[in-house]
Each structure stands twice: as C-alpha cells, then as structure tokens.
Image 1 (cartoon, rainbow, N blue to C red):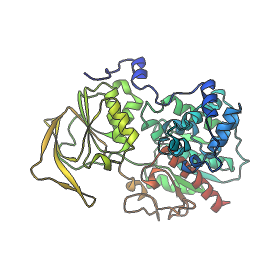
Image 2 (image 1 turned 90 degrees about the horizontal axis):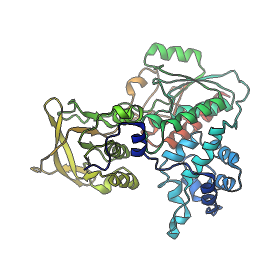
Image 3 (image 1 turned 30 degrees about the vertical axis):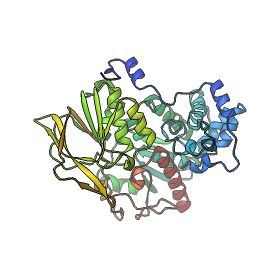
Image 4 (image 1 turned 135 degrees about the horizontal axis):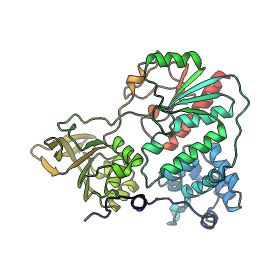
Length: 440
C-alpha cells in the first residue's frame, strides 16, 4: 500500500506536501538564535554563495532587531526568504556550522533566515528606496532569480528596468521547479511582490522574446540587456518509446505539480530515470501524490549520483526505491507506457560500460525522465556576436558577466549550466554591478 493517498482537496495537498522547513514563531527563533556561537571567522558565511553575514543577522534576531536581520539578509541576497527554504543548507551554511564537529545539531540557519525575511514581507516593511533616475535603461529577459536579482540591484543604482517574462508567473524555477514541500507558491509570489514594491522594476508577463526582430527592438531602445533565460525542456534520451503516453520530462512534470497538482495524473507504478536532485524531487512528488510504487533508476552506482545525500534520503523516506547500475534501452508499451527495458552497467575509468546479456524489464505505467535540460542555443543564435561554450552555456567575463556581445550580460542557469536558486541570485546581482561598472 502507498504511504500517501492521491490528494483530492487542498487540505490533502497540504498534508502530502507538508513543509520541510516550516516558519518559526518568535519564541523558537529566539531560542535557536541563542545557540549561535557568533564565530569570528564564521565558516557558514564562506559557504554561502551570496556571502550573507550570518552571525550578524542571527545576533540581530536574538536581540529583537528582526527588521535589521532581514536587511542584513537582503543586502546580500534578494531571494532571502525563498533561499531560506529551498537552499541545500545541509551542504552549504548549515553543513559548514562548527557544531558539526562536536556532534551537535547545526544552527537552523535557513529557518532563521526565512523567519526574519517573512516578518518584513508580512508587515510590508520598506527597507529600500531606488536611487534617482540616472537616465539609463536596462532590459532583463527572464523573471527568474538571476533576472530579478539583477533588476533589484540596478534599481538601487538608478537604472530603469523592464523584465520580459515568457510565462504568467515570476521567479522561474523558484515557482515552477522547486518541490512544493520545500516552498509554497504563495511564499514565492509574496516575496516577488514585496521586491517589486521595494525597487519598482516592471515585469511584462506572457511576453516571450523569440525573434530577431524583437531582439533588434530591444537593442535599439535599451542601453544594456541581461539574459536570465535559464534552461530549456528536458533533454531526450533518444531511445525507443519516449513519445509514448505517460512518459514525461521531469522539469515539465514538476511544473505541473506546482501549478495544478490536483490535475496531475500519477501512475500506480512510476519509474524515474536519473540520479540528480531533480530526479529525487520527481520521485518524491510522485510518491506524495499517491503512486503505489516509485522506482528511481540510475545508470551508475549510488555513490556516483549527482544528488545530495539528504535528497536521496528524503525520497527513500516516502517509499522510493532505487535501482543502480542500470541504463534504459527502451520504454515499452503500445500507445502508452507499460514498462522499461534496462541493461546492467559497470563503471570503468569513469565510463559507463554495459554488461552484455544482462537486460531486464521493469513493469510500470508512467516514466519520468530526469535527464537534464537542453540549453537555449536556438535563442542565443538570434543575437549577433554572442558566443556560447561547447555545452551550450553562455560565455561571460567572470568579473562582469558581460558576454562576447558587449551590450549583453548574463547569469544564472544559462551561464552556470544549472545550479541552485542562491547561485542565480548571486550571479544576477554581480551582473548588475558589472553593467554599472561599464556603463557608469
């Protein structure tokens, strides 16, 4: 029997996707902040991609200066509330906490961070004011963490900023790709509304940029353009059966779970192919949506998986099973998925070697491909003089995030190939400073 039943109401969803890092109340925040040693050379700060002064904001919480704590957080990371929930704190700030060396539970930095930032969002507290207009205009393509962070920083310096977003909601994978038990859509949207009120950037929704004519128009009107376009659709495996009904890309599947969870069809027996964090999310979500059996299949060993260990443990905790050293050769079925044919593998000198004669089949009625995302090189080819690397990531100057076309800057997954929300937020902010250093 499955651990979870298929949810049919909003209340069912709340139970199935109970928050991993629920908000603290003031008493909890006070006692947790009291545990911090306020290390002078705090390793947690070094481990944070945005360099938040963590001991400072925790001390501010402990002394009752919650608004000051939020300001400390947002000064470094414009996605402070979201990152407090979705960041892999277990391997970043909390993973670096000195308490780990004493067999003591590390400080719950992520929850303290979300506590402080949620307070100013809820109170609609004003912490920032844009600088007087400097007469320069910047277009941002993509309202994800990189694009919005870039916009916030530019507004602080007096730039007029317009964000062009292809979808009807902001924040990219923060809303479309982060598992609902990590952060709710409401939390994401509330933070974006707060940021817009603070900084005054404009977002044009349902406004995709997909033609050379649009590109030329933007180039003529704006002084600089930031590309926060993220990644594309799930990368196909090019094996038979990928077009069968009930074979989904993981990114597309997770998006549907985030936007219309009660309408998502979940198979009784689901096979998730992949070994990254996205695969773990897809598997865990399937189990929470009532799948009777969820199997995670990876072509290498468990130790070689790209997913964080805690993500795999989270999936196992809701009943997901793992099959390792097995690569799919075909998805089976007549019109719709009925199973997957695998062949066993070994790893030799870093290469995956198949074992002749070791084929086996696994019955299922749904397959989710967590095989990575395609790069948007088709879009990039519309921009004259813009170059990308062999893997499709945009070439940038590592100091300014300027591309090979001097009018364009870029950051986030389109540059780093696919990292965390916090990395995109950091790169968007650095790109804004790069724009200012060149245009000022």
